[in-house]
Amino acid sequence: MINSIKMDIYRMVRTKSFYTVLFSMMIAIAFTTYLEFVVEKNEDFLEEREIAAENAENPEPEKINFGMSVNIATKPGEKVSVYNMFYANTQGKFTALFLVIFTIIFTMADITSGYVKNIAGQIKERWLLILSKSFTVFLYTFFLLLTFVFWQAICNWIFMGYLVWGDGKIFLLYFFTQLLLHFAFAMVCMMIAILIKNQVGSMTISICLCMNLMVIVYGVIDKAVQNLGKKDFSCMFYTLTGKMSMLPQNLTGKDSIEAIMISIIFAAVSIFIASVVFEKRDI
Image: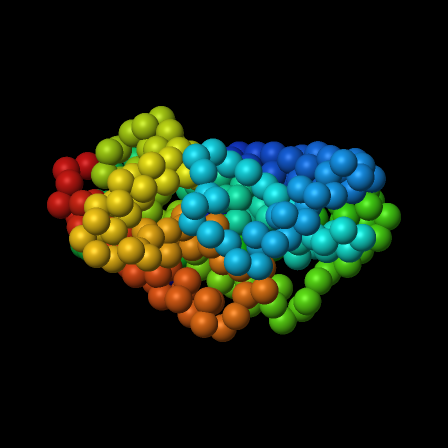
């Protein structure tokens, strides 16, 4: 198991996608930070900014639509903090988009190349390879989000002319909550890749999930459950993509615990299904 983890970590840092995804994200962060600087100087956007700040306090399922949107939640006259930018991008699943792209490429690399046949023949329990991949993806998730935070801080200092971090305790709590949500989401995408064994197909599905495609399905389920008498039911509160979008900016311990529990459940189920399929399938 330890050797498998070492091999996957080595393979991760040696693959081009490791650096390509990070570099692409850094370019996107610099560009969006510059746009935020332009918007901050434009008074026409003050009303929209104030609405975004109000929505960040109490996110509502009805306001989450199909597509990807990143709304910076700051009050008029308030400086944009690193936490504001991190919150907006993780809530909008902008960071998740880069994560799933790498996860699919990394998961399918040894399968599509056929190299996994050499590895699997030397291991009695092939499901250990899935655990090894999962651990490696967790490390990448942590590194990706950490890179986002520090690069965002540099971009804020360069383009905004100031550096404000935001509330430290809430920032840390939100960071680690989103870390687990992103990792669980990556595990779902890895499971999809293992199940359909097609890189393009799994990449398409994963990107669509980042674009809130499931909102359409959630709406159908919500109406069905509400017709049965549960008027306040919403799937958004019990799914990974829903929790990513629904976490309030002023995160509390209760909100964090609920999100962590959902993350653990989805990650465990996804890893289990991927392990069973990989163990039984003829590779």
